[in-house]
Length: 199
Image 1 (tube, rainbow, N blue to C red):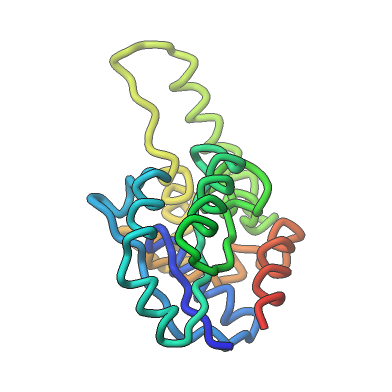
Image 2 (spheres, rainbow, N blue to C red; image 1 turned 45 degrees about the vertical axis):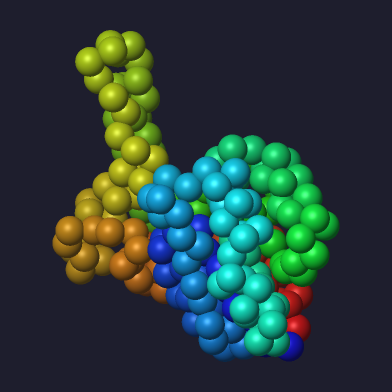
């Protein structure tokens, strides 16, 4: 069977491509980003609407490809899964679904990345989290916490002597760089098992 991978955002796309390379899994040759008004701020409802009426998905199904959809569960794992199951039944789309971070908990690809940082540098991530907590504890409406992506961007920038990356965009990071990431982490087992189950 041929698969096409659909991603909610380019970070997911890049991470999965790098992870598949790490696993030496080359059975997925086609990928696509689900588009919306703002690809980085897509709500689950908009994704469902886009998918339900999307020629892109239907054309790939008609072309013999089975869609594999990757979504964040920042609106709640159960609600995302329920909406996608309704979509599957209502529109007779047949697809496989993985919901970040681990196909069972609420979160995003960012939560997955936080859980697979190289143990040697885990203390750097803890320092960044303390900074976030400190700003949050000030409880001043003038201060805003940085976006969740900022934590991982800071992690990579702090380690730029290792990563060689400047002006970090998470959609361009080398996730195979073992000095930064632990791709053998048990946290990735649900994703690895999901990918391996697609035959």
